Length: 200
Image (cartoon, rainbow, N blue to C red; front, side, top):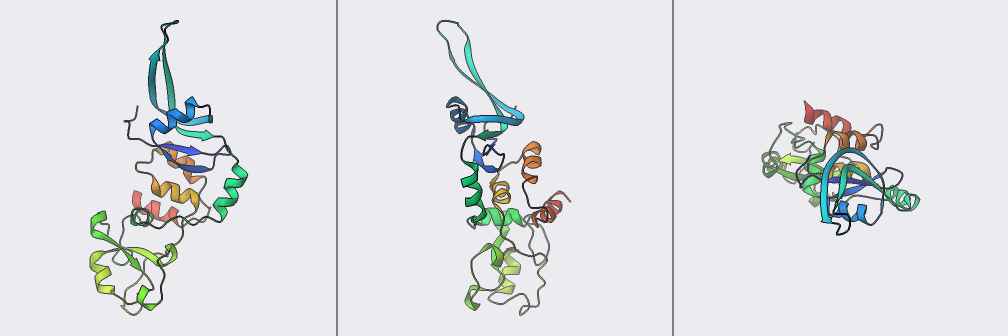
């Protein structure tokens, strides 16, 4: 059994990942009859009240992955046009908490967002122009491009797909949830190599 902080992966009826929900939201979805099917391991058994007639106590089992009803065709079209919001937490996780200049792994408070093409040179604050950099490398690079600063960029920045972004938003992704999510990553996803760096 997981502790009550473990997140549940919610998908649409076709199995496309949508978001992470806490156990309370998952209970509401089960109770309202919105969960069409579930899979993965059982995370929780939540107990309710005792039936006055039968004397039995109600309970709801919550699995690590739940599929909910909804128009998946509309959601799929929206996902194809979707650009996830850029934030440092997801960016650092995308880049496996590695500085993409010196190649060293750092804690999140030692990291920063670097604009490959600096903002003062017309660069944008978008996924394809930002990488994780340690504060030392970022300060050294300053307002220059990697070429101008004679620094090698170790990996290409990229915009995550919707499924990849769902992974990046997860706090503690369980093995069965990770296996499920990986099936929805593009075959040539650049996140695969980042994940190998995490496990190395």
